[in-house]
Image 1: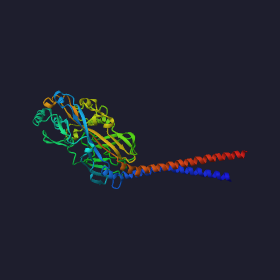
Image 2 (image 1 turned 180 degrees about the vertical axis):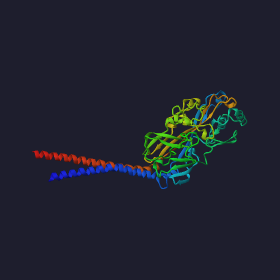
Image 3 (image 1 turned 120 degrees about the horizontal axis):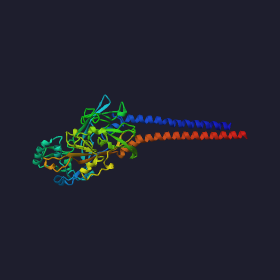
Length: 471
């Protein structure tokens, strides 16, 4: 009777252990469904969700740091045709994205439209000097006017007269503030500056999907300035508006897939690829970086053929590392690149000396939390360059041997998750996920242990009983 009770108890224990283990196993897919459902609900762009407040206004401080290239040998370049030698000076730091989105409108087709206000506030404590620091750099007005896309060679004599009468030259001395935000040029008699139209203006209208009906589309841009495609490149592929604005992506990221985003700064869409998993304040993030193919020459990446606007200045479209955005800059000879011509053709750094590209300091990256798709830290690094070329008529260009893409400034637009937001994120999401995972593991482990222990004990007991009967 006692042996029977023990055997029955062990069988019951094994059954109980199996049930507990099965319960733990069932919780794995069930828990995953619960987590995914909660995440998908909270990442929809609509009032009341976790995503909405940070979407309306950037939760973290966003800064734009500038390093301006100071020309060391302007006289030698002008008089002897020497190659320019530059030395970067910076950072000069400004706080941006401090204003919330405006004119937010939710549309019947599960999209939201808005304007993104632009403004910059100088941060002296985060800068190497003041906005009144002087630098020697390219004369923007001369470079713009001399551009063959604006002024044919037959009109160079007119430009020569304008340069002489305004006492202008190929290079100029300006303050940091003037170069960035604008000054009245004596030759053009108009305001000139790299970002003279930034402060007090808007980027957009943007129309993005809210994700209400399809969470995989959340944040994806449906229209920019009322259009579903660009009109800069005269090509269906290059004019596509792909992905989000990079502030967030669809939740539950698959690291094997590229993520896509559109940047109005470079007038095109781009992709980023997974590089590594990192720890950011106790939160796992996926780091995505721009692949070298982004600005590769069309000979390496045929998809970039439509971005090559002028074979003459790009060495028959073989030049890598620069993007001619003149078509979205009213024809001005503006070229975008990564800082110090990272991933660019060697000739770019041979034509202008003093550059030293570094993957860690000069590449763009996005650190994205994979469950929610929220970008927790980013660094958008781009360089603004302008081109000048030779002329037999214009005095300041007579010694110039070839078209030169001259670096003006590179910027790092960056933000990172603060401690308070990180703690809140961990408490509201990460801790819940880990608690559920712990319960799953405890139930599964305990159930398996009870089942195995009871099964082994049952076998031992049965073996002893068989031996006692034989005896």
